[in-house]
Image (cartoon, rainbow, N blue to C red; front, side):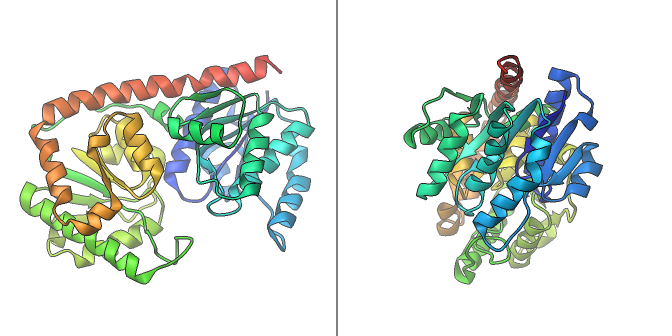
Length: 381
């Protein structure tokens, strides 16, 4: 049996790599395939092949413009797709047009599969934003011909229904939840805190750079973390899920902190299993990166979310802990808001631990339902 996976892989975004690892492991469990029978379309084929032991081909072939890029990609990769028994499009927040390419690129793979009569599923994805007519058309086409569709939150389902998707849409949570590996030991009070930060408004990463907004963001984080150290007597460890960009912003934050001696930065490209190990060693995670929160939940480590994007607040709502979700704007306006949120976490520490264990187990069970969708697509072929 030959299976293909297409998504935002090979980008040193270890949140997305956590999704990929979880999908590969699910395929091994469901179909008993070897990794040599799995093909991943990747931004870095050598890295992906070496890391997972799978076959890998380029995700896209750049040409003079967007449409010529997708045409060249179709012509180059359709011969691989035609050999599959199943194509998985997902997971991650790929049903969007924010960076212009995603909706068109992943729909190109849906077109390859449809023409080759290969069943494909849209799997555990996030949807939005979808602000362009062509973006909505392409995603609607992809969903129309999919064997089945699953998304990671109810907001994504609602958006797809609003743009005209008629097929049933399952909400299964993020595939990375199947990396579930709860820790056994907890301290009597939270002392060691891991923090992930997104380089918002940094021109080297963000679609549009804004020096003033970036400075406000960095300053707001620095002030909040300083107060957190002062009021709650914690130590801070910065870690990255997108390397090295996340490290750069944490260095900028650290420079602005007066209590920088109580912080450290893990300047390392942390692969999924190492990420699990890192967050498990900490009492709590304060995350802007969605998958820093998801990986923390996999290890049953309590979290506080900082929402820079709707997908973060959607996750916090899905898991029933929206009371621990802070808006990025609040961080910039109120330098005490993080310490107040952490104080509430500490006051209810035993209840928070119990709640986190329960939601970790539930998230794992919901994400595991995706394996049934994989099997159904092949059976219905």
